Length: 233
Image 1: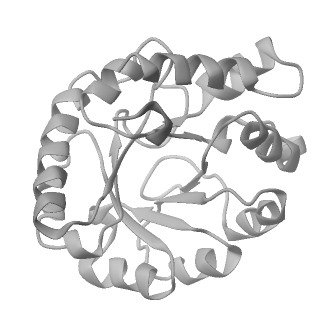
Image 2 (image 1 turned 45 degrees about the vertical axis):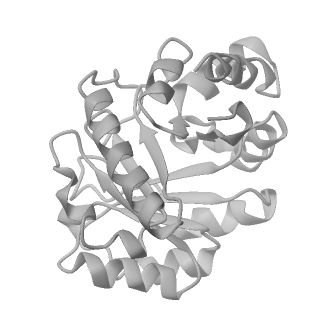
């Protein structure tokens, strides 16, 4: 895959919330592609983070896509709120929906891209009958709920299996579906992950922590380093 076709999506879960607008603008100015927006409800996952009002607040700070990952149960009630708040991509966990097809349709009918999120132990079978309604598959390479966790190596085999499914669907339909990964992504493993078939990478602490050390107000060095590693893939 051409290096310029990879997506880097910093997770604002690791950003400095006292100046969140600047953190969003600066990371995009430094070469990131999407803003990853983690929503946790202290119910589906053991943490509580941010909601649609924060998404609405950062929307004017960037024209880049906002990639909303809903770790909430149930999901249908809150989807319209994030559509209204300016989300471009909305993904959710199939375990958090009573009717996966209906939830995907709710997102796509509102004009957003839709996707499913698979935890480390969640089988990929959920995607098989709804491929026509999926724009993104997001693989969790950590158990959801907290930032800063270590990458689970077994996710590489799962990524290869997901890529095989997506490639077969693209060959049949002519429509491409992104394969995204979230959890423990950094400069040491991003090339290996890309070789497993992933083309969109969520990086939280790897960007926001390393970036602060290298660049006072921007994230040029760390995003450049991630791009350099992806070029090796």
